[in-house]
Length: 86
Image (tube, rainbow, N blue to C red):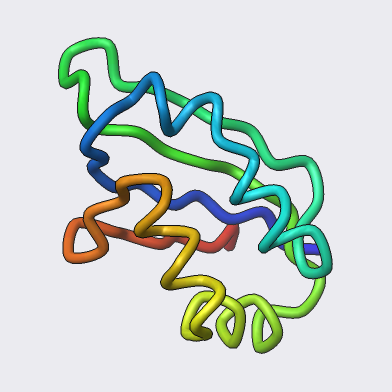
């Protein structure tokens, strides 16, 4: 199961950290979701997670539920960068 890292900017870090939306949306396709905050850039955050099926994960990202979760969490989608464990 590959581990992924995704980074992006958010509007409100405190809201993003306490939101349960990512767990709800990614529960079926990801495990061990951990959050990170850049101490030098307070709006820059990241996630790591284990993803068994990258196609299913990508489908969730591109779904209406994925877009709604990002909007709810204040994610700035144009800043998202995804990396997959090599």
